[in-house]
Image (cartoon, rainbow, N blue to C red):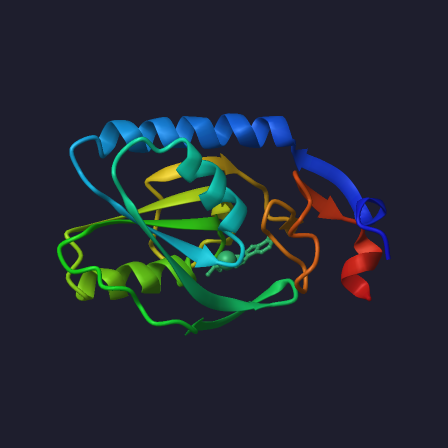
Length: 179
Ligand code: IMP
Ligand code: MG
């Protein structure tokens, strides 16, 4: 029932996350210095990443939040649901911000949709990349770090809606996933 005692190990510490976020912000600031990008944060997992990232973005930008889901427990259902209205992206330089790419389905489909709606450019900023899980031909333009094919939680990422508030990325004890 406790938060910390369910964690088997910490994979990426709070301090490491801070360094990753600063590095990505710098890359985006450099690449978009003459643009006014629209950041689209995917709810709910990318909220801590988006919030910390924005604090270090120094270009004039706008933000939107989009609710998408494709996971049930620790498995991808393979069906992407978009639960909120897609913002107006016509002519905009969109940066999609998400927590993790696994199969790539979410970002593959969403990127296509946003391009089809007339965005000028679409890039992807991701905190974690699980390349071994990839089933779709999609890559992120800004990548925090790679993770092995393990189910991770924390810093926005959940297991059945819990553990999003851990300040680091970790793996849970096996018995938690079996419950
Ligand atoms: P994809 O469509 O398979 O790439 O899945 C992407 C989404 O699945 C992410 O935005 C997460 O919400 C979720 N997801 C994938 N792997 C993990 C994980 O290890 N922990 C928590 N959520 C995950
Ligand atoms: Mg997500």
